[in-house]
Length: 91
Image 1 (cartoon, rainbow, N blue to C red):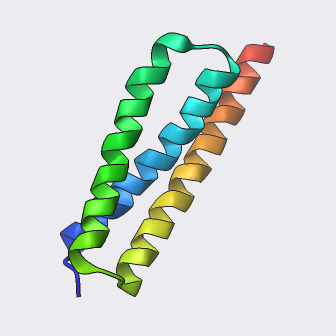
Image 2 (image 1 turned 90 degrees about the vertical axis):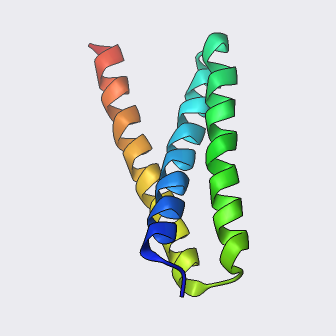
């Protein structure tokens, strides 16, 4: 079984990657060109961590669950932040 540290690193990287993807979508929608490249590089780093960690242990259910949970939590965070930002823009 993969170590707890590997699970946490993978879940954290996936959490951040999904949050960054949502942020990148907002960059594109709002024409924030200066933020596109740094966000893309951060996304690539997170994706590399996820791929390397999954490659270390192969197909393992616990790592798949950690990856999925991290992704889901990252998505929920992005949805919450986006909602807050929308309310601030409308004020």
